[in-house]
Image (cartoon, rainbow, N blue to C red):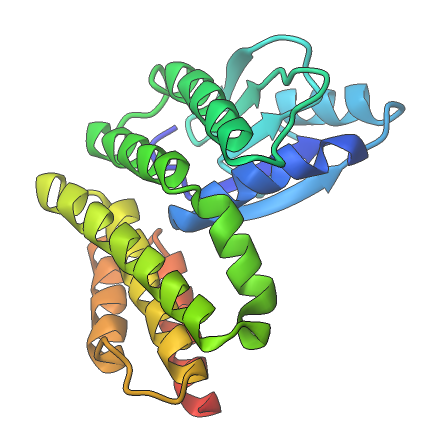
Length: 243
C-alpha cells in the first residue's frame, strides 16, 4: 500500500464504541473513514469480497470482528487487516481509553509497517497516535463536536487550551517530519477548531483563516491524492460564510 488515504472499519453493532475511537483517530490524521456494520450472517461474505478484490473504495479495511490479528495485501493499494478485540472493551474512563489506544495502535503499526511504503507517512501516523492517546483526544473532541454550543464560556476556554496544546505537540512533530501530510493536516485542523471556539464566543479568531486555507491547498498541490486537504479548506470557507 503506497498511501493510506481512506479506511473502512468493519464492525458488529456491539463494537460501535471502539470503532468510533478508531474513526476519531483516522479523521484526526486526515484520512477518509467509512463504516460497515454487519451481522454474523454477513461476516464471511464481506470478508471474501474484500479478499477477492470485489470491495472497492478504501485503502485499508480494518476488521474488528476478527478472532486474530493478521493482514493481507489485496493489491498494491489495498490492505485487509484483522484486529481482534477483547470481549469487553471499556472506554468509559480515561485510563481505559489510554490502555485501549496503546494496545490497538501497537498492533496496527506492527501490521502496517510491512505494507506501507512511505517511511515518513508511517512515522507521521505513529506520532499522531501517541498524541491522540496521551491527550485523550477522542473523548474531548467527540464532546466538543456534539456540545460546543451548549458549553459555558469557561468550558469553551478550557477546550480551546486543549486544542492549543494539541496544536503545539503536533507542530513540534511536524517540524521533525515536514514530509508528513497527515501531521500537516492535523495541525491545520486544530487551528480550525480553535477558530470555531473563538467564533462561538463572539471574539477575534486566533488564526488567519485565509492563510490556513492556502496552506491546505498547498498540501493538495504536493500530492494530488491528498484530497482531504481540499475538504478542510472547504470546511473553513463554509464556517467563514456562516458567521
